[in-house]
Length: 196
Image (cartoon, rainbow, N blue to C red; front, side):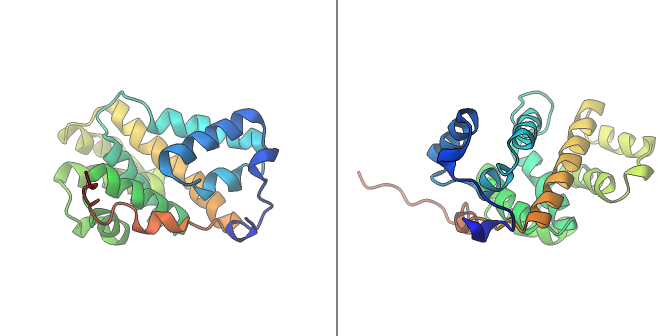
């Protein structure tokens, strides 16, 4: 485990029951434990707060942002913050949600040249402004989003995801968090039909 972080990584069996249960649930669903769950478990109280805010932002059913939209915001802003872990991990999730194997790489390198809609471009332009110069966000930025069908609540969601992953990016970089090998190939190739 020491190869995934410069900080001590606790053993799964040593974690409090609520944390262990959540990690095992993720492992059951994904087939592996994403390293972020183990690295951040170094500080249980912060892990719980991080996961609660993560879930509030990414698992809610309100607003007009799709799951793929949310992941696209994470990939683009994480690339701007040079966070290898989040680009790789959330790029994998984006590929799965969007069912577009090339999209994550396109938006990570240069979303302005990616195969995205004008609406997605406006969303990512806003996210990047929040990421790089939030002090300059003005009413005109909200007007642009509104012209593409986003509400002011959607703008909050875009900004909150950007800000939360700014924290995540910095902690991943600080800790030297290594992406799981499984993320690199996830969603790149269509699954072959299972034999009957």
